[in-house]
Image (cartoon, rainbow, N blue to C red; front, side, top):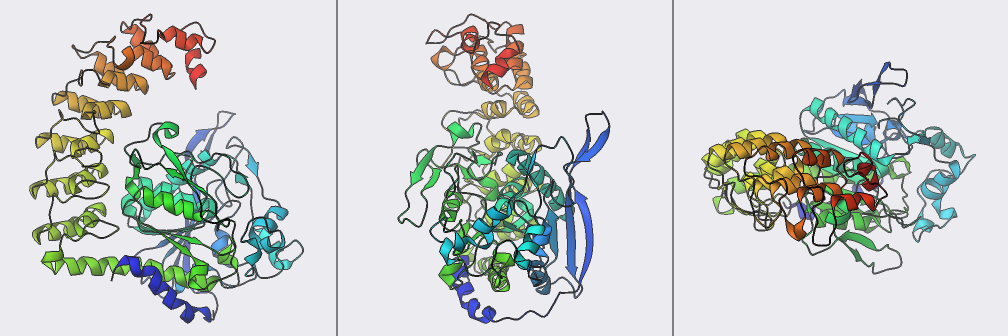
Amino acid sequence: MHIKTALLLITGAIAATASRSWCGEVPAQRSYMYVGGQYTQNSAGQHVFANQMYVEKLTPTAGVTKPYPIIFIHGQAQTGTNWLNKPDGGEGWASYFLSQGYACYILDQTFRGRSAWFPGNGTLSVYSAELLQQRFTASQLYNLWPQASLHSQWNGTGVMGDPIFDAYYASTVEFLNSATYQQSTVQAAGAALLDHIGSPVILLSHSQGGLMPWLIADVRPNLVHSIVSIEPTGPPFQEAVFSNISARPYGLTDIPLTFLPAVTNPVTDLVKRVIPSNSSLYSDCVVQADSPAPRQLVNLAHVPVLVLTTESSYHAPYDWCTVQFLQQAGVPAQHLQLADIGIHGNGHMVFMEKNSLQVAAVLKQWIELMIFCGLEDLHDQINNQENINAVDEFYGSALFAAVYKGNEQVTSMLLKSGADVNAIGSVFHSVLQLASSQGSTSMMKLLLQAGANMNDEGARYGMSAVDVAAENGLENALRILLQKGGDISKNSMGSCMSLQLAARQGHKRVVELLLEYGADPTAPPGEMPPLIEAAAHGRVSVIRILLDQPDVDVNYRGRRNMTPLLHAAFSGHYEAVRVILESGGEVNSQNDFGATALSFAASCGFTNVGGAALFGCVE
């Protein structure tokens, strides 16, 4: 069975679930925990615990029968109560999935519900009843977007004074105004939760919480089995429907995601284009341009994703853009529009609506296809050697899947069965590159013993496994490759060498390791040698190491006669400017356009190139 047939099979399950009745709450064992957070000082100099996240664990009394637990992530102004029961008193999705044998983890995002907020965490906002009526519960009365009139599944009138609406509105809470702070704290706490669980999970999320799986999976890719995102925050790079202002500089998030090639400045590195919609019902999309090649979300490249969109929601015009962005970035994302499988009238709060269990059953079908189809495909390939290197649309080959999931037993079995250890992949050129990017030293040793070519450069980005380890700061992985003879003199990505990549990212210990193994700190001539890369990105510790090398010229002139000092001054890195000046940087050196470090500062109204004001000027 192939994954691409999943949505067709789900369609066939709809009739069986449409009339399903529910018989009450499912008996479950309950516990709770707090994950993430740290002690910090308040304004009085005393310590408080901050940025922790409340998590409630439910396990069916009858026993867990499914291999992966589900983590439920609510949206803006909501708490984990979204998933427990509905405002009309009906059972919620947590009960449904408990009845199907899943362990369930229900969180309150940081600063919401039982996850503490305290003064100093930033300002808070609330949603008005009128806004929720317009967007969530009674959109058919306002017609603010083309599909709004189709809304029919909310139980009750959906307006103030209706007991079901009032019960729902009473459950909403304040939320933090800072999207970056919210995202960074949920990412950190979410990673801590996955570390605590210790095995792969399914992330099921909604709305503003819908972007959290991208962030959590990005830092714990081996602990995420699959993602179900119900109308996630979007579309890429801008708002839609209610405004068109720029938003989410990393495409789907406000804080960094791991792209290949790496993104240092999203404004310049993520080159964009517009895809016009083919109907007045839908929004235009901003996605990555086709040239240069779209940067890939490498840590999400083997995580199956389902984006679900309801018929009447304000997400209906633009969720297709989110899916386009994910697919373009190498993520195996599918888009399920409920209307396409005969489920009509739902809005943004689909899990609270009259037919919520019917929709839950659809999601269960998809989740279990992702669980069991992959195992069948792998079993077939192992038992049919002529297909051992067959490629599918998600993992590439079975060997790529096993390496990505960190399963050394399956990897070894595949290699013994004839899997090609040097087969070419899509995002990662080789399985050794993939293992190197994860820092999995034991997996790398297994692949090297099987004959993996550590100096094979990727056809797409020209990066070897050595380059990948260097760019990502993976010292132990890099050491293994260098001990085995990894080549650090080859150019990758057009012109960069491993030492340049490490210097650019500020990986001090990796830079030291590469120098120990003979990397040339002056190469490549005429390009952007390591010192200029470090200066341009403000990597002070790396600058110090490189300036200690006997052949490194503090006044080296690169492209357009830009010196390290000019690069540091232009980019506003005060501490880097200071270190370079102390090491003999020529303060009056000029580039091809006659600019000096002092003129970069003076253009912002400052006269002291070494002054702290320079940093403030640029930033």
